[in-house]
Length: 259
Image 1 (spheres, rainbow, N blue to C red):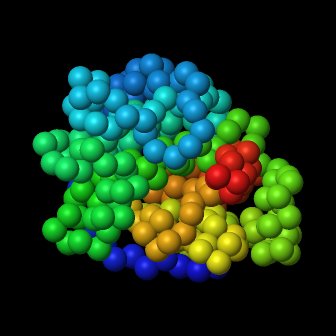
Image 2 (image 1 turned 90 degrees about the vertical axis):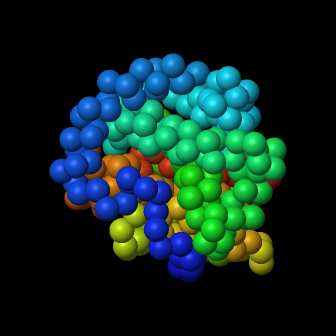
């Protein structure tokens, strides 16, 4: 397992540093709003990373939250409709609103999210833009890394590559579990295709994204507390096991591997 360097120490304001009690109180207040937003956004998303482009009238800027491909309760019991409504309807939407506000009237408003992420990575003067752009992309990618009745094993060329690089699907899952479980604080665990055409497991802190180091993301697991705390409290490992066994979308990973 490799660890991507974390060059940004501060996460998006109002996410990192909140106590668990504050999170739960905020979640309770936001569930109703989040559920409305989620219900409006659960119709047929297409595959591929990143929120789709939208008119400024829709979201206040060039980037819009993409609709989910599954119903709010479809990922239960690993991820409840309550958690999904808050995570998707409040956190993810919030990153997009902040990003749209930050890039409005600038050349970045005409760029793609990956272009913004790569251009602002490591630039202290653009930390806010990086954090919101990366978190917007990371979350859109995370939603697609899951599917109802997921888990299992890959097939075809992806399976052959997994066996070549890890020896077995079991070993890959063991390493991906380790990356997600040992990421200190907030962050992400990733399955990526490296520049050497080998599949690797990485972990990144806060908003960091492996594409800034030349890797191609195949799928990801969100290990920020807001991804699992309402359902699992401090039992991150239970959430990770559930993700790997019941939600992981090998179909999405295979499409990214082949693309």
